[in-house]
Length: 318
Image (cartoon, rainbow, N blue to C red; front, side, top):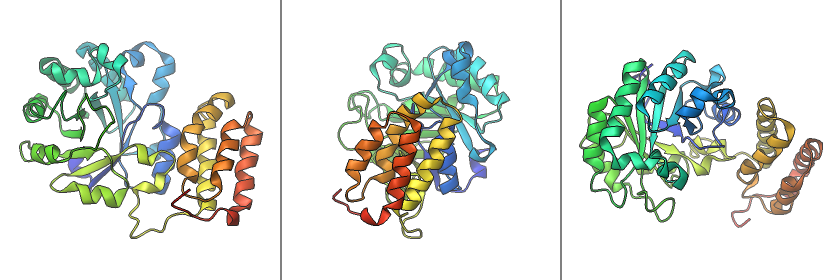
């Protein structure tokens, strides 16, 4: 399958470490049928050496179209990992060249590749030669500014990248300040492959408003615990709290299929705020849910909240 086989605009779940595992992806797919899903941010060396990390290659057939996002710095490791990924039947490989985390950058991964264009291109070429999958790159505006964004992305295009996603901040910004999409629009006018925008997208409608000349967009942090963010709010009403809790329980069940109880309880806390955000009087329940020490108590609290749904009216101020 190629990007050209998919309908535009390309609406994507952004890859997020510890968030976009198969359980959450399945929930997003259930709510939003045409979203393009991306895996967690995964180290190529980990895929090669660790059976535990290789569990990230597992996915449900319903998740298609599905991309695996990987990071690293060694072209040979990328080639070996690409073969493993192709064997699993995913749509394509997304190479991270934008993560600003210090430990990632210090290892010459992620954003560090923006400063080593030759190595970045060698990685792309290595993946292209080792498999027949679509290869995309997710990166940032640049290190300090966007001056080198166009030449950098042109080199990536020449190396064989079939799609680019640009987060509208520099490495130095991290996740601070507002995302700048103007440089992304300018890039689109200077390459011949699809370009997606990423950064500060609130929901589907907001993403469409941001698109301009782009081919699509990614939604990241706003999607955590809120799979409905990919729906057109002008066509679909916002789900009530009862629906949100029902989906949250299903999400937890899926997470328990891949994680033991004590880990699942801890990891699910990341999603709780998104599921019940916006409802008056929900804050106290959210605190109780986070403090739940065992699965039985956690599920009971969610079911109790669902039974008292009339007490939790929607409130933008909550």
